Length: 187
Length: 187
Image (cartoon, rainbow over all chains, first blue to last red; front, side, top):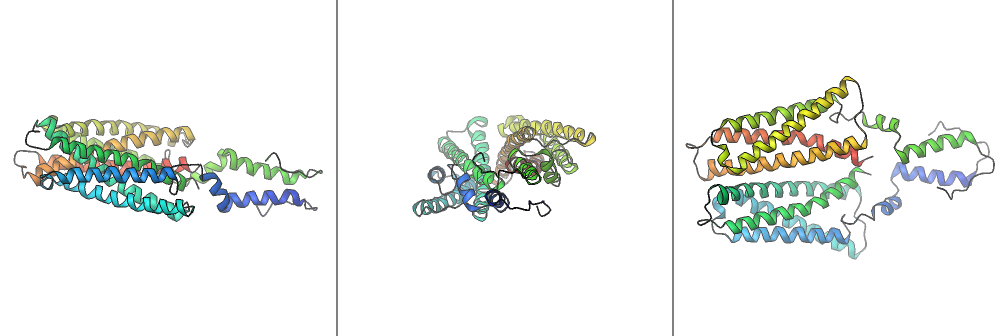
C-alpha cells in the first residue's frame, strides 16, 4: 500500500471512494457489515432467530417434562443425563430468546464479533450435550423396546417421545449455531 | 463500481494496482489465497492433516475390531450401529489419508472451494454418525456396568474400550471438520 506511486496532480474525485472501499475491506466498517449481514434471517436479533429460540425452548421443555413424568427414569443414568442436558438447553434458549426480544424491541444489532463468538460457543456446547443425551436415550430406548421387547414393564412410549423431542430440539439449535459460526468465520 | 467518476487524463500507474487489488478482493485471487491459507496446519494436503486422518482411521479401526471381537454385540442394536458407523469412518479417513499422501507427494494444493466443500460435508456426516454411535454405546455400557451391575455376564471392558476409541476417533475428526469449515466460510 505505502509503496504505491501517486500522480502529481491528485484527482480527489477518484481517491476518496477508493480509500473508503479499502477502509471498509481492511477495518470492517460497521455500516458495511450491517448492510451485508442484515439479510440473513435466523441470526441473533432477527424474528426468525427468535422463532428458532422459542421452538428450541419449547421442544426441550416438552422432552424434560415427558421424561420427568415417568416414575423410573432416575434408575437409568442416560435418562438422568437427558433431563440435565435438556434443562440446560431450555435455560440457554430461553435466555437468548429474551435477548432477541430486547434486540428486536430496541432495534439493536447484536452482530459484533464478541457477541457472535459467545453465542457460537454456547450453541456448540449445548447442542453437543443435547445430541449426546438424545443419542444415549435413543440407544437405551431401542434396547428396551426392540432388543428386549420389554415394553410391558417400561414406559416405552414416553421414553420414545422424550427422545424424539430432544432430537427435534437439537435439530433446531443447529441452524442457529451454523449461522453464527458462518458469520463469525466470514468476517 | 460502474458509477464511479473517472479523471479525464487516465493515470495508468495508479489504475493498475487498484484494479488488481479489487480483483483479489472480489474474485479470490488464487495466489492471495495460497499465501494466506498455507500457514494453517491440519488442513487437507498438510502433514498434520495427514497425521489427523491416520489417527482417526487407527482409533476407528481399533473400536470396530474390539467391538466385533465380542460374541454378543449383534444382539444390541446400538453396538451393531457402532460397528457400521465406525467402519464408514475408517473408510472415509483412509480415503482422505491417501488423498493427502498424493497431495504431499506431488505438492499439490487441495484448497479450492469444491474440494473443501466436499471434505467439509463428508467430515460433518461421518463425525455426526460416529458421535451418535459413541453416545448410544456409552449409554448402554453405563446401563450394563453401573445401573444393572451386570458385568459378570457381559464384556463390559470390551464395550467400554470400543466406546472410548469411538469417542477419540470423533474427537480427532473435529479439528479436520472445523478447519475445513472455517476456511470454506472465510473465503
